[in-house]
Image 1: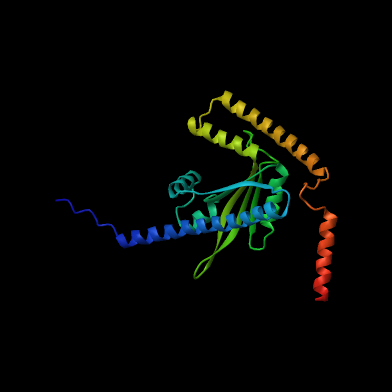
Image 2: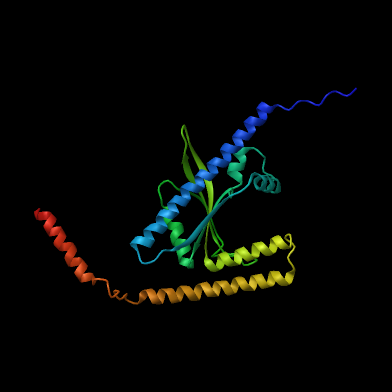
Length: 242
């Protein structure tokens, strides 16, 4: 007579599930922290300046299944501490900018904040991948303040132009459609399209810089700058004598 199958330890299962939940939640908190920083920058530029370098921002949290698949592909042990250090794109943010220079500008503004630690930079704009992929990748650490502790969590931030983002989205769909086995003809067309997108980026940035160099005319309802300065000076004199 066969021995009965061992009863699984549900207590241990509950512990693992709770640890995984905490692990994923902390990555989501880190995404929220960085998204807040980017939202503040974007809102500041939209309200206080005449131009914002941030077009739009998105985020994603890799699923546990995706984490395990990548860990197995790279030979990373399946313990949470190692996964948190070695799989650096569990928490991911994508910043889409209008122009190439904006990507570097936003990266500088973000990484100079005192609570952000820059771990690594992968500049695929300056050195594109063989297939034409271009993007600026930042690996950063951000502190997540919990009720009883602080955890530094790794976040990957990708910065790219609208043209780069459109190309990368199409490339991803094609590789998914062909299950990574993309015909050589399509691979070549993707590479050619990447070069065309880069030429478009360079042309649009040049035109943008030329337009910004032209002195701005005040709108019909807008007071000239000299009038605004006089009003501010008069207000300051009034406050000084009050």
